[in-house]
Image 1 (cartoon, rainbow, N blue to C red):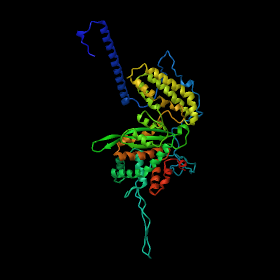
Image 2 (cartoon, helix red, strand yellow):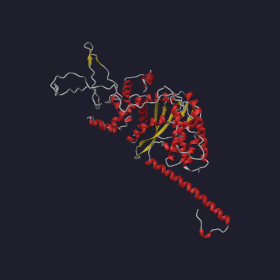
Image 3 (cartoon, rainbow, N blue to C red):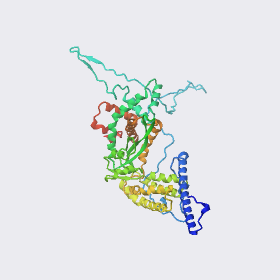
Image 4 (cartoon, rainbow, N blue to C red):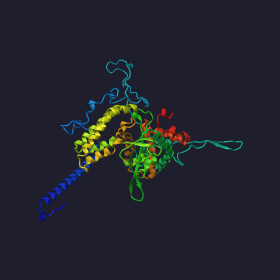
Length: 506
């Protein structure tokens, strides 16, 4: 607002109106300045600050109003010991070497045959044994396949065993080598050009394009297993869902385009389930809501997700119910806590109390979890909602803290749904952990070479990450499965090949 100082009005009422307008403009401008400063502080913390979202002990003692007690009492005064667990004994720093490893004995005998001190004869007095861990480098070998021919002298018929099937016509690689390439690429995050260089050091010159052809052929064989795995995930009563960016090479434009990698995780261990956990990935060229609707078209149950609005489409027919993530809500307040907001810190303290309750409920049956949440968590959730609404009325509408509070309140029904259902967790951390290895691979490989390459990434990563979730060594599993599939394993029994413990496949 510009004011001509040489032509100010003499009417007091008009002057008062102008002053009020100026004061309002100043207040509005100051609010915007504070909001922009907050954004700058968040960018600075994201660039230079630490990543861990932890609270220091002295910060947990912070209260907003010293003269008024918090509406939510400390967790230690109300929460009973409901875990019935024994204290965890910290394992020693160094453990014995695994028994399954092969041993090679090296005997070092004394270099004397008689006692150097007195010249007496030496006799056996026992052996001191210690162990050291050794490494035998990988080696490349050639498997030569000989097929003798047998001819009949009477009729001249020639008999010979058929050649073994290969993963692709003319492919030089055995299932073992292909399993090694897949594991190195999607488990150990070694791009194909680095694997080509490693093979060259062994005297084997293989172009990166050749390795890519092997990956393409292997993904074709493994795709039906990914479909079987998705059926296993959709049979769950509760599924986690999330997505992450996946750059995809865009030929002709000299750059990449941003695709998405969707992850769907089943993990029932939190409420005592014994069904094997699993994660399935799907690659898509964009992030439109039609993709999760297509992936989960056969799913009926609870979908635990972050704040992405595209998942709302799944709830229209009433077969899917959303549960929100407290970790994403907490993150909004943590960003503000790092820049010195006492209200954000108090919100973190109250959310932390919910996590302390959940730590004591892990592994209990759903009904018992629901009963204990009604007793311990519901009062805290209701008090926290009331407290946030009260604080929201005191803040400018455009303040960053107001945005964080509105983010939580707009999803409050989905956030509080965990109280009424013992199968729901507080957050989506299981799927977040499943996505983390993909981000490491994305950092090393930079991008997928094509949409087809992104799809192959999703297929193989689904099986490898599921194997890791179930404690199965990916390389050995891939080698065995590829061998059996190439040899003609029945399609009707493909579910038996999933990377689950043997008892789950029986």
